[in-house]
Length: 174
Image 1 (tube, one colour):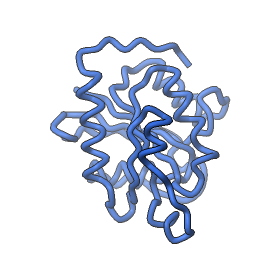
Image 2 (tube, rainbow, N blue to C red):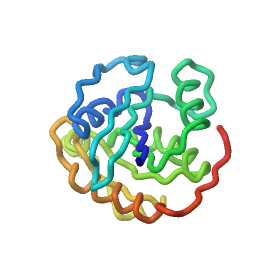
Image 3 (cartoon, rainbow, N blue to C red):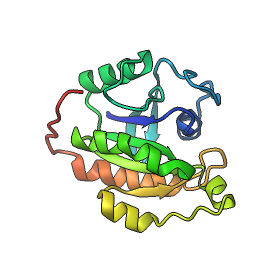
Image 4 (cartoon, rainbow, N blue to C red):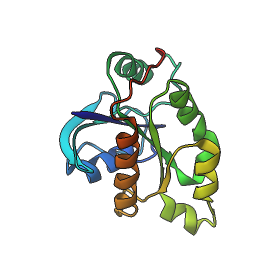
């Protein structure tokens, strides 16, 4: 069974995406610490039986908060077939560091630019193909709240898992 982890900073919509992808009803809130533990469900995603894990929102993989320790422990003790890194489309520059830290650990990633609809209303334009090329990671614009971009996200996730299936992925501990 594949293991897909949802990671991102607090209030980026990870739990909303988790609920959208899994049909679950994890508690969603707009304040830090709402997901202080991890939530996991087994579901069929992109033709793969997968354990989808909603991890607490964190700012950094090296942090010392309770949330960051939960994520560090999860990464250190579990094989992750894919990390869907959820960023708020209106705050990309502040949030890319988490993706870069995961890439250094050789964890396969897909970047989900959430709240794309809100960023568009604010006049923010994102060149996803250029960002994808520079990061060497699939970049998908989504709105977890409204279900936009879910098919593209599942397709990209399936493609990345297909590429890494059968490969031994070594990674350092956090």
